[in-house]
Length: 469
Image 1: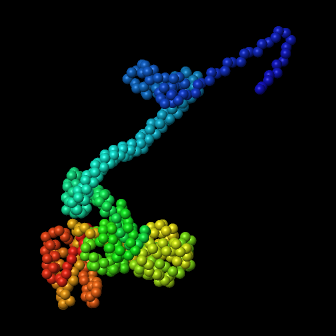
Image 2 (image 1 turned 60 degrees about the vertical axis):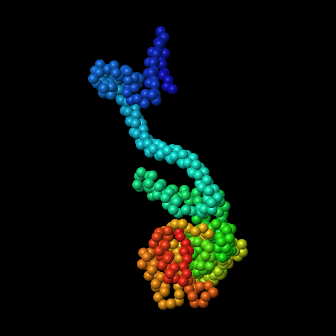
């Protein structure tokens, strides 16, 4: 606060002049004014209606707005501060308005794809809802088919009927690019229908050798995800369970890309003529060294696994000088190690088995062959009706050129032989039976002619399996 010292004079009292009134404060701009840069100038609100009242109607409102900033020379000094402030406010408002327009455009570009994605997803949901109702309707018809097959003793799988359905379904699709995908879709629906029929007919039990977590169990769940898995101690019991009717199917290993044939299974196929091979499944195999949690490699002294797994991991076991003991199954070996609690023991099995029994994968993929694959076969009492492969078991007289004659007949008939194996005949020393896998349609006339020709040449011949690869 400032004070003035006034000298008092003798005579009449002197009055001080009144201070000038303060300048009125300009109201701050409102948000509504910022939304429209044409709505205010020099602090005075304007509307579009006011701008349309300009003398020259040929001039656009935006150009008339710019004319408002033209000042005469006489008034420029008087209103210079006000003019500068108004121009600055107008420029700020124009910048804010332009920024909002640009932001709106960018936001629109970002929202449009999301709106299109949401719209497409809503359409998919609508179609899925319709498909769910149609699925229930289709499965009701499948149930009626299952009851008819049960009453008339018909097999669940009918290859000829399935081929007709697939061809008819594919022909319904207008877009050629979508036809193979729809064919796969219908094939999957028929596979689900067959599994449902098997459950309705009480044929949804599948046998395998070993315990839960074994490679055979993994293959079984891939082939029959809705079936009841029946564990058997040995391969012989798997064959017996299917032959007695205790299980509709049996899943057993047939050969491995690294260790070769599972000869015992082929011998069982030869000794069970009432069973058929109706399907094959190739399972990629990764052998892993499983230990109790926290066990280092230096503490290990014993390794347990199936003989095939040991053979596939032979290089690793020799490198670290780990003796291996064969067990009936890889999962059994893992279960044995887990229950023993001995940190000096390890098992060779799958990652799924490790998780099942609480073991730790110490060294993954110890098998020598990186492309290790095991082929499993599916056994059934029902004779298969169609496929693109078929296998034969035959014997020939022990005479020069007999086997060559059989091979020549197969080649002359136009069939490609993908595999041939020989095994000693049971109870007949130094006599052998042969297994061949041929590419072709087993229902074709050429196949029937081939079988008739082989029946005249071979001592015995039997159709073992029909399947698709």
